[in-house]
Image 1 (spheres, rainbow, N blue to C red):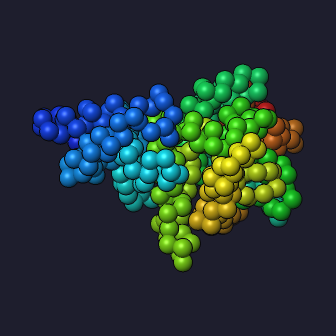
Image 2: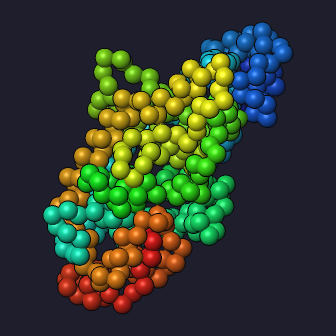
Image 3: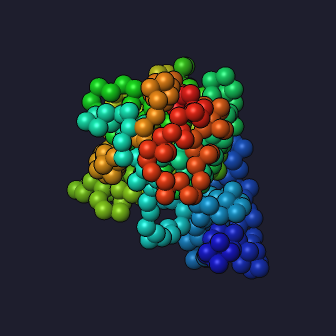
Length: 385
């Protein structure tokens, strides 16, 4: 990561502070746009702030970016927004993503997918969201991080801020194909239980309750005052909204749009499916009380619910997982256990520590499926997924 940090905003600031002219302009800019005030509030000395920003246009600070999983990410993002806050000031366009693109061509596969060959779930109509959950449970890292957010996101122990934090950790540290399989698993039309499991992936009742939702304009302003949320929102704008109007998100842009969408999970702008029976998504806010800013409020809502790029990206990903996961069914389990697994009340239960996931060892792949069934039956399994 140290070698990759070259060119980040932390590195660019270090170089800037070694130059008197650059450091003077940068340090002045830091006083212009503090995050402790409204993100859309104009500074009293706006002209001087804009002049200082212009003086840094030919400096490496103007092109610096940050990395998704870098150390001191908050410091890096603070530097980026010190430079870029004047642009798009007072508008709903954040001007570009603060994140540097790193493409890693790494093949992936689901561990234990070969074990999911037969089971109690019907071969003709398998619940692929249950299968995605099972695959996460069988993966040590996915299971561990899922239990971590389940502990603070469960209804009984709900800690909203901690829940959001653990959700961000989960979606940033778990391999993309496991996280996406949970979030974009396909369901048959009318399958409420499957849809509920998908919708409850990040425990919306705790992380983003829908009772008395904030006005979208207020939510937007709350997001802009948070370094991470503002950055993820800008990334979402760049990769899911800024597109050629004649081309609706193609090729690698689909994957990048989904990554940006998932980056918002765990922030105040966390999106989710609008219902168990729909693949449409929305952010948890309303436009009631918007007054003469109703159009701006609708624009925020529509960036999720009427976003052709995001819609196509989600649909394409669901088609992919339908092809990938429909080739097999979850492992054979008892009827009682299956009924528990099928309960969509929670996405995660904190009593999973002794479940099948934690007990499977690397050598499990060499045993027969029949013997695996005998091993799993007596084990206590996650009561709610």
